[in-house]
Image (tube, rainbow, N blue to C red; front, side):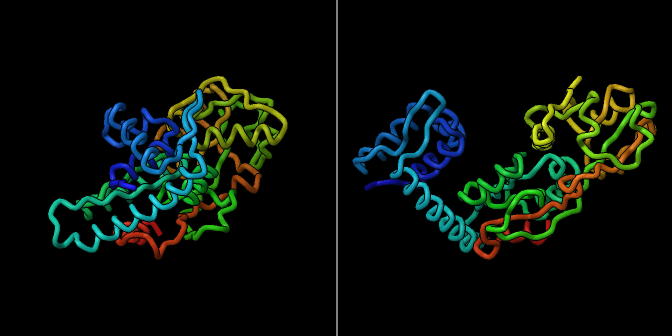
Length: 292
């Protein structure tokens, strides 16, 4: 069999994106070149690697085996590049970091900016995902690091505490619930909400919690970020749920009431996760030292 590193990276990118077109784009290849490479890999193995369907592609058993080995090989190549970085000009390491909405907007920007300034040879592929998807990516080797809520079970991974990140309910000052100092989530679900974007990790999580309570969020409008939620709540558009850190950072007029959300999943701690911290390349461990 004759595979090169481009073949292996392409194959993993196709699996991560779920289709050949997106995998080709992530690999900086044309669709025709990517298709030819995958067909060549399948011909070399005399076995199909991908099952093609209307919604994209999934790995066959042979494809799953190839993916496991490809991740190990590419990880070893990263270690090799790191070890030889002092001798090779132009070395560029990349860290794949997944995190939830609160981490992305409230806790990471300054930390990552300072790290990038002090490590000019490192890039960070930062993506927002719900905590469960982050754990899935770490377990399957498609991310180096993840930051998740402790509401999910990460017991099979290695974790370090990152930040306390409780959620708060914010309300217009004249709202019927505004005199409460503590509320259950279920007590709010008959009222209108200002929600986060439908594809945000926290937005998805809150809608799931409402379904667990047997109801749906009554969403009047969506905002792109926590500041947008707070501004709309302050003007009376509805209730909102945001991290306490976003409330503490708010510099606008005090036009809303803040209430503790009395739910175990709202009293959350963020965890830094990896499959094995010791097995990470040195430049990834350098970021772990900054974050932890």
